[in-house]
Amino acid sequence: MSWNSFLFELDSGRGRPLEKIAQVINGDTKEATYKLALLRALSDIGTKNTRLVEWVGADEVAVPMKLIAEKWLRYYWPLFQRSDFIPQKNGERIDGPKSVAFRKGLTGLIDIYREGGLSRFLVDAAAGKLTNDAAKQHQKVLARLAGTIRDGPVQYASGEMFRYDKIRKSSANHAMCA
Image (cartoon, rainbow, N blue to C red; front, side, top):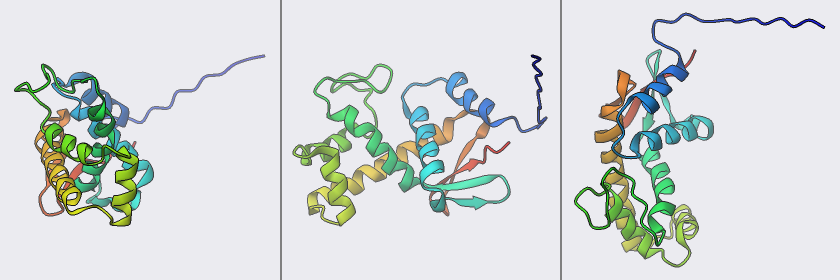
């Protein structure tokens, strides 16, 4: 029995996709879980919502901020509804000065949906059956989430991997295609 190994490598000046992601995960300082949530959202969108992104030029895709914000709402809801406080930012404490930017707003929406939780909220939202209070709170939370995403990980991720596109109201991301 004999074994053969082959190594094929594409030499690219722009860097390889996994190296870019590793740079954001390992190389950046992370004061909050925002960058990891952004990468998770983009991964989810890339596998489940590809029709909702738009190619911008040859090497960028525009991902609607509202879509990313909706993903974040789903990610952070279970963490914020827990009875035990789980900090999401360095130095974050209950009612402390260093709180996650959208915690108060999302907690308000969670309080409206104490009965039924995230599942009930998602069903009501999909059916267009949110109460006026819930709909207003939902829009406030989405706006705050989008602002946090834009002013946090989109602006500060290393390597200029992301940028905010004002016209499309989206995160324009360098396509990570090898």
